[in-house]
Image 1 (cartoon, rainbow, N blue to C red):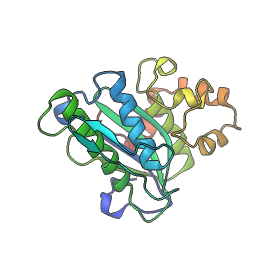
Image 2 (cartoon, rainbow, N blue to C red):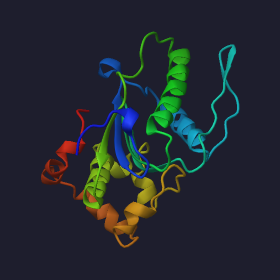
Image 3 (cartoon, rainbow, N blue to C red):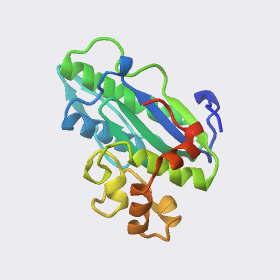
Image 4 (cartoon, rainbow, N blue to C red):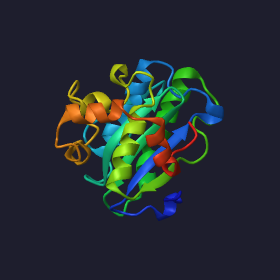
Length: 207
């Protein structure tokens, strides 16, 4: 397992994608910011439409990438960083998805808050996930980023345990590792330990 430069991300591989705010500053200041980021992600994936978004005197356009290019397995948006577990399904590199979403979101954030300079810290980071065991433990780590995973609205955990019917993630791969039983997955995530974290430390980033 090792960090991959975005230029050599390959189809069929799963990646842990991470980035944070510049200087570790917040990138989501209120609920609407989280929702706007997720809306842009859904548009890029082709599961939602937003032809025009008014931003001051300008109109921002954002369109979908080719259908089926990526599968989001799980995600978590924290106030100053984000995590995604993504499968790249085609030759289009995952950098296209991340850049499209984050460029659009940065424009929204700057316009809303009068922010100048970079919103995100450098290029996003990506690490390849090369086994089903690492995949499920990484998903538990991502879902455990909030102190109260079950009470947190801006991760995919509520979708996995049946408390919400979100559109962003394809849950079939991960749930298939738990007999398609949301309760079994819930127990697995909530039982995630420091020892489990150590077992996947090569896949993690400094939050």
